[in-house]
Image 1 (cartoon, one colour):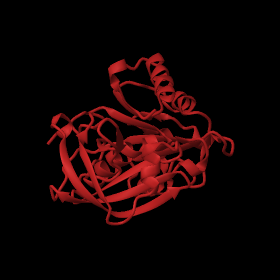
Image 2 (cartoon, rainbow, N blue to C red):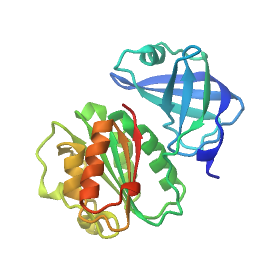
Image 3 (cartoon, one colour):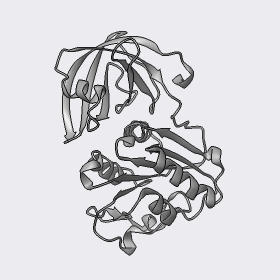
Length: 263
């Protein structure tokens, strides 16, 4: 069922676990109380109130296959009301929220090749989407370009490495602003059936490889053809605009670029 059109409902939960993924990135597991299960589509988010006129939106990092406990992930560096609240969470603390909300969801019936591009905390809805797809038998090719200012911001790096090893149809390209120089092995491109051209003969990149550059630059280098392509882009508005401009310059229709703006 597509819940992207469902009306959000008020929910009651309690904190089951809190953990840091990096110095400024945290996850919290929330156990559902009322209702006992929370049904949503991968890629959606919830709203948490901080007073009568202040709410903050948090994307769901877990998948719909875990309706009794949901995981939220947040960048707590800004130091605002949401960041302070997240840092102070304790086990057993009640947390109300409203949801699900959002239309940044992937539809399995879409036959197009799919490219995901994420910037730092913008990976959260894409992590939910990709994990859900491949753990439920999605057999088609997909690629992820995951960008961070440095490797410390690629908080789900190990998960996507593992996903790429387990599912050869999934191609993973981590990118940071400062990293070892790009080699020929890491610039094969996104073409054909929607996988790097050299991936047909084995893993497209050594496990230690992380590209250097900006997200839009890597998209420009790797995407050789936009025929039959749909892109899901999540992160800051500047990155989204640059990636969209690159893809449209290659001939992709504007409506074929789905986006989720975090800041």
